[in-house]
Image 1: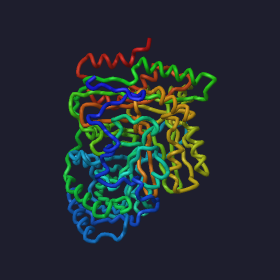
Image 2: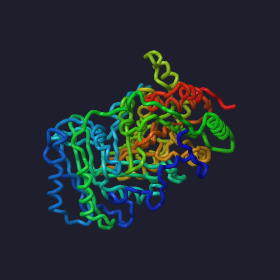
Image 3: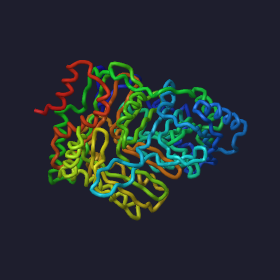
Image 4: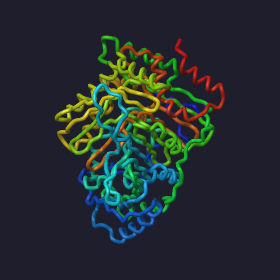
Length: 566
């Protein structure tokens, strides 16, 4: 391997180029204020929360001068409040790609960046019953008077960020909600949380903390038929972030924003993998799976399912921009959320996840169960046969029912009523198909994202059942830090929120290494070698983008898939 892996506290950790310390771990602090800093000591809403819509323009490059002028006017007439958040937005009468815009800003590595795209409102479900709801960014935005669905969002800089080293708590959620309001529904905090914030943080994940959210300073919104460019300024004297500091940082960020952007850049198809290494190895995987099955099949434990994961480190032959890799994954984003989160100067967490954790709008909440995996068929007939095998597989049905019924029980705690429709269906993705169920309910309390989030995460789809026993087995047996992999990834808004599950994901540096994550559910009847093949299938959305530099590496890859432990 080009870079060795160090073991710390029983887990494999990839060394950073620089050593982090508690003093400078959160490098983004000087760029804006940490809304979870605690100095304010209040969960009271900020004094001002406004959205100001400026005159529309015909093209994206005309929006930046319009915003600069609005900033000058705002600076000359500052609001008389100790705290607040203001969004300035310019509708663009042209549909432009949010990811193309973000790529044009890629030279600004010191600024945090984020991207989220909708999964779409109609899912490709082959069902035993009727089709349920889809899921996406869900909100509508007014563009030149018309209500349009928000397709994707790209952000640069942070008007306010929220980060901590302890597990995400009620106080942290309240700190975020202070800066959000129902009347300004496009002011949102985008980010992610660790799968398990109680475990040791590996160096490659340190810049994320246990959770990391930002309200972008500069944001590009891609709508169905048009676009929007927006600026957001936030301040709070109690958090030692004054109006003038916030204004100075906003102007500095705005000066760096490129108003022109070209075509979407994708990976060179000749980009090659030099070497790779799986953690765990195939032999260690088989041992862990068999150990899990012994507990599941035994009488001394209540464990019925545990999800074990693999981290694969790939070394490639050229320096790679994670945004270029994300663009190359777009073909795989059908029926999936696409996301990108990068704290300043840190690796980028990216992925295409098919799994919704929850979507909440007013009193209505939706979630879904996703379990069981098969490849897609080459022909329609083969695809149909593979799907039928999955639908009627006893082993996969056990895994699926565990996930669905666990989510149903958790929703019943916070909802007056829960509906499941369809109760079992096939979710077909470009390379993979899963068993799926759509769940919905009416919340007892409209303002309950924290309860929803802490109830549903981690689900049996990424952890197991019972949760604490599965979590303990993962902690004791996995050889790496999951970080944000399999954790909640999404956004909080004033009147709605949505989170996906951070699977089908990777951690990418602006260098030559990529950490790709995949997991598989272990239940009664699991065959270790088949689950290893499932990991390969799930990782293939990344690995198919590369060539192998020499036949030996390709042979090594094939051998890792087919070999068995002694």
